[in-house]
Image 1: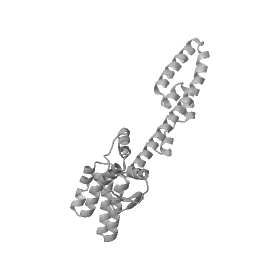
Image 2: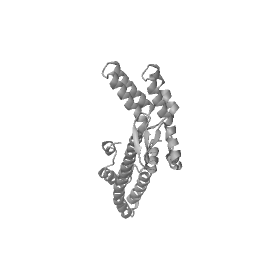
Image 3: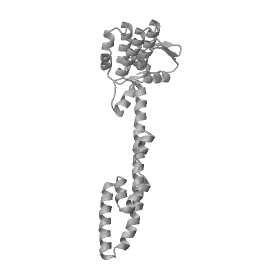
Length: 252
């Protein structure tokens, strides 16, 4: 919800006071304090009736009437505060969803992007080399982002595209390797923490290198450190065990 949409829903202090000027409790009803407004209206009509019949209750009705206008304004402020807080929370959740979406790759998005590239290639907007390069860039996103689906579900979503020849055998093998190297998608924070700690628990260098190898990374000693060959051909040089561990944490 944006700024303009919730401003329309805000309650006017002036209207709340004006309604309570005529009937104590009406302003509270306007400010969405329904139960409070009904109770105050009943009290107002009882005091008004007694004031007309006895006259004595007028000294009670007058301060009650004045207080009712003040309370109506306070109820309008309370409603507006709840509305703003609700809007801010909804906006925060939307921003968090956008942020999370940027960290994951969805099978539908991947297939959609692949089909767009294929259509551009079919009408010669993209040359063969450009088409292959763009597909490679798309596949590389599997290195930088995590799958939102199980690897099997992600690969199953690619079947229609594979059947019509959108991907070469080499590209299929690359996608399959990267998909199965992905950590299993998790649905709560405790599982996320457990997944993030997998490499931390592999304390020895050999265990870290083995974990990387399973994910398709080839780690070779180089001087006092290592050279890592990534699944899609990239090379990274690491100079210490700590940097090796940090690199592994970011990839698997």
